[in-house]
Image 1 (cartoon, rainbow, N blue to C red):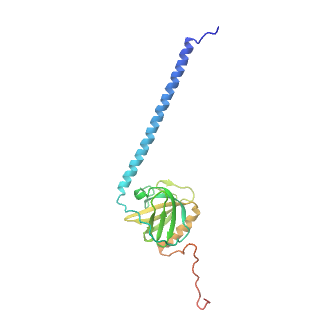
Image 2 (cartoon, rainbow, N blue to C red):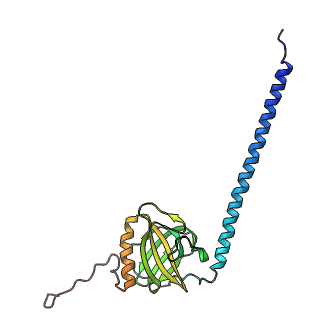
Image 3 (cartoon, rainbow, N blue to C red):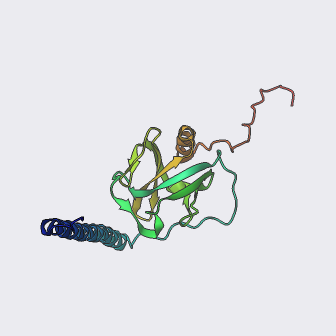
Length: 207
């Protein structure tokens, strides 16, 4: 006849069951602590974002896109907008008027300025007279990019000078954009995209 479990075996089984319950309690506690920590971090980030927006409230509304169309000076740059900062300080992120919102973007450079179209945020327009510089950079607004980096365009908005960072889907296009923006700032208007430059006719040539 088979005997039942001994008293010692019953005690071991009870201890194992108690240990399992205790482990689950510990796991739930750690999960709760992690959730509270993550929520706390997001809350601090949100408060910092709100304070930054309040400090930048004096920044004027973004320039509206003109009603008229103008021919592009080169092929539009399709890619991503990585944010804007005060000029020269890649960590001083500007969040007012949606300038801090990263988004897909399509840039169009025209004789009258730069059109910035953002499906996930407000479109805006930078008049040609407000453009002051353009350069290659590796990062902006705390974001560092891999090889190819960013095309950073500097422009004046109200009394503030801003750097705005863009990365094309094809970073090799950045060089052509750097040259075109530089020429536009200098007043040396590039030829319209898709338009051949006019040929000079020598005196006495057949017309």
